[in-house]
Image 1 (tube, rainbow, N blue to C red):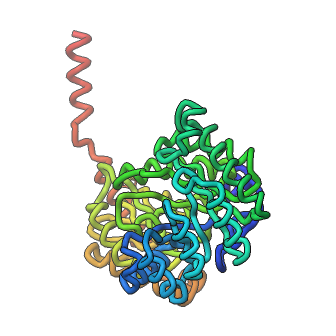
Image 2 (tube, rainbow, N blue to C red):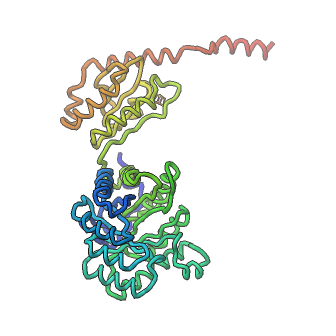
Image 3 (cartoon, helix red, strand yellow):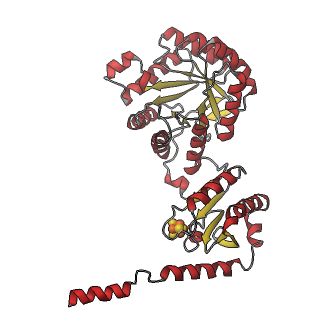
Length: 409
Ligand code: SF4
């Protein structure tokens, strides 16, 4: 039974906006964002990174627009990008206007950086006339000083108030094509801020733990914050902020949404047992090799690598395909049914071969094509292993006898 969807709270319905071709909010799929690390003026280098991000799962990519050369770069990047481009304009109103001129599909304004009301309203008016949405991107680390003072710090209430004030400026010029983020590097602050934002605004929310840091800690912090909110039905788009290759951000976003059942699986899901004293192979090595070989195929398939034939196929019976090790041989199974027995050194190759065949022919056809003698061979291996593990290698009976002799005598 698939309990994935029902395990999460119903998604909170927000007003839908369009970032280029990508819908954000309402019942649109939760989208994944990342940000380039190249100089935006380097058009070819930036496009290369955008393509890599899109291939890893990013639906929307943000580029910095901090100088005229960056805005000129954007004008060339936007028409060649496979995904919509959002410009981050930092402190200068001219850069926001130049990015709009370059044809970007979205802007990000930080209320702590662009502070003059007339400039904020000018950008909002231009965006309104061009049909370009804006993210109000509040950040605890760069909160407007007046708000920081009023609330005595970057509290969740202060972050939401900053977004509310910015939104009010936008509404003065009749602009509400907006999504909102209230990020903090503290997971607890960020969770509380987004909960409050979801009660306060009907606009879509962009989730993220800011400055989460390098792997693996950054990934854990990002997941702790984002997954908690998604499980509560909060959030319409997300970005992991990692001190790493941004491809890791896109990959993490994709994997999180797939794991929560919020996006359809696009690539490989490799599951593997943690290994234990029963393992008949080096599970870490086989799983790593299988992951490398199968990832290249880009198939939406769940594959299991299990250390022993005694428990493996049963524990991973929900996987589309799997292999379990035993007696120098691998038992290849499809949805828990043994289809072939292969020599140990051919386990990874057999997995790749079968994965390709499943992609081409389907699971039912591959089950029909199974080796008729495989189940019996596998059963014999299991019996032998159970027997071997059942030997009294500790000579328990003799020890018990001696213990009794001591205590009773
Ligand atoms: S599948 Fe076998 S080796 Fe892996 S953890 Fe379970 S019992 Fe141990």
